[in-house]
Image (cartoon, rainbow, N blue to C red; front, top):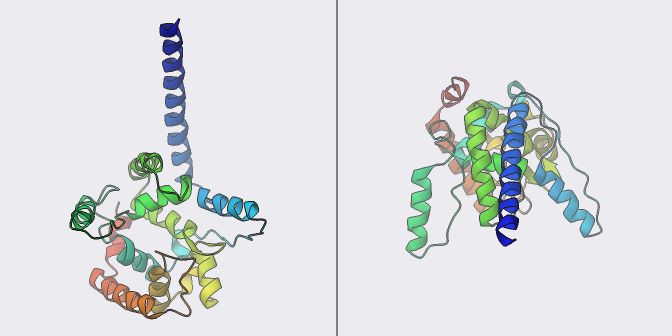
Length: 236
């Protein structure tokens, strides 16, 4: 009896697993070609607001690659993932450095790539758990296998959270500076990139000393990378 029940349970688990794999591949393939008008993090923020008895209007407008500021593209890469064009979703060197630093007593810092952050923002929730990290790794592999790098960055810039209810570069540019996503200056883009680690508590228009120092460092890294860096993404 127990053996038969275990056999049925394993069979159902295999069917559910296979269905998840197929559906996730189909979803990722579809989103390679169509605009992305929402994300799981957007849904999570709406649910959080509803549970707290509050309303949270979402500000979000999709903008294709050509309508996104090159300054913003380079700023986010400089701030978040300078080996974005070179790795396959996971920056092994950065993960190793973060782990070694934690073993030496430092606080364990994040080493997520733009690909991982896109996977998390688009498909998953924000809480920390090994389950979420496992799903994040799976969707990161799919994004890297099925999307070009340019598409990964395009979607990331369109869905990343920049303030309470503010998602994507177009909404962030309008919210902080009153300009569209394609008209952001180098300084404005660097400030937006500087607040990404804590976007609901840091302000791009009134940056404190830490954010201002970080934005200056990002601008220097942007110059070190050079505008030709983006050409590597187009050649992917």
